[in-house]
Image 1 (tube, rainbow, N blue to C red):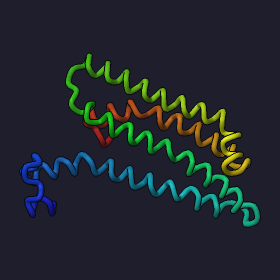
Image 2 (tube, helix red, strand yellow):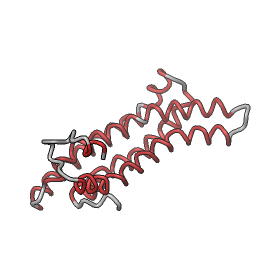
Image 3 (cartoon, one colour):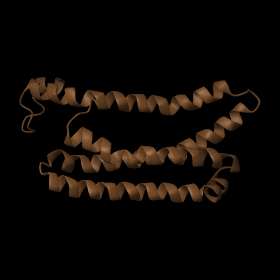
Image 4 (cartoon, one colour):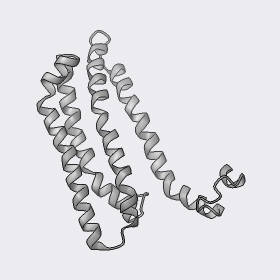
Length: 168
């Protein structure tokens, strides 16, 4: 809104307050979801620490936290992949072109899922060598949960950018 008042968006296609209102109306749900995701990524470790016994809790929490931080690369990959496909997906109007593009997106998503499956099998040597043997089980479980998260990329992108329904 400040940009509109200072005319900093001249020549960028923004000519009215209505354009800014339309953008905010489209994106605020996505912003809220991103904020809640950031909060949840910290909250799980704090809750785990509070719920476990004081003698063993810090060690188990550390094992989970290490596994969680290593697995957190997949939401970053998923977000980056969605960012790359969103401009193309938002301008497609032909169903045949949409089907072709969604097949490509699905293959890319399967590639990401393939790396997750490989990491599940390599979790023991990977985590044992770099961190600790106790972090292997949480790492594998978190990787399994990432399969479902990453698998949602095509559907979520289709709904948000092609159907233009971010509130769903």
